[in-house]
Amino acid sequence: MPPVDRLEKEADVVVVRTAEEFRGALPGTEILFLNDFRTKLLREVGPGSLRWIHTSSIGVDSLMTEEIIDSDIVVSNSRGVCERPIAEWVLGVLLMFTKDLRRTIELQRSRTWQHRETEPLLGRRVLVVGPGPVGRETVLLLRAAGMDVTVVGRSARDDAQLGAIASFDELDALLGEAQDVVLTVPLTEETRGLFNAARFDKMRPGARLVNVGRGAVVVEQDLLDAIDAGHLGAAALDVFENEPLAAENPLWSRNNILVSPHASGDLIGWRGRVVDCFAKNLQQWKTGQPLNDVVDLTKLGGTAPKALSQAGTVLPQSASIV
Image (cartoon, rainbow, N blue to C red; front, side, top):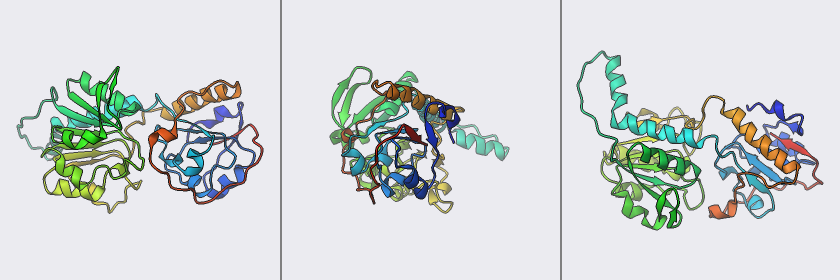
């Protein structure tokens, strides 16, 4: 739970956790501070008379409903909080794989002295799919560590920082060249199931997959099949289609799959920094200034599933929901 008590002098704050509480708090409320990025409340209840939604995450897939996309609701996210930490996590797992650190820990536990040779990080060929804020930080950090990074986005273009960005149309051709594939794309209709059996078959034998985007970008059973067949060397997953990951899910049991509880971007104190982002935007809102980190949902593409129901519309008051 973020430290929302610091907002109480700025607005009338109501904390809701259930659909019933959310429905009851909507009348007269114009601002939603969305702390739980997994929530289905907006699909179940609808946005009502909300005018602004701020999410504590970078991803906005829980907001991709027709009601919100087709409305005048302003959407903003918490950029600058998690991007660098996620990039550091990606670098960390690539180091773990190349230096075989997981095996080193296992051998230490068994008190086994086993000399081994490891792979270099320098010059390693990495494909980063998704040049958004997280992808950008990841590309810059991996290149600083000496890796050869290619970037793929929705459209081909030149970027002042990243250089040439290839399009999704070129993805299949590029997969066979990469030793590591890092997914940093948001979840849209275009990216759902983007990495399936056909894409894994196109990846270089022994290549490794890292997913810090959204779990549903990867077809989990197809990934397991590619791992079990020995085609892929390893995977590091911080996101999953269903979270928390069920105890019986076979992803837990593979020695060459790292399961992380959607925590790659969560540094100590991150909740306070998210509130800081929202509080700064709240001041902008109250003084009529443009908000920071506004997200254009229409540019993410895809057709959003329709919300399940409608909430009543009332005149907005200056209140916020967390």
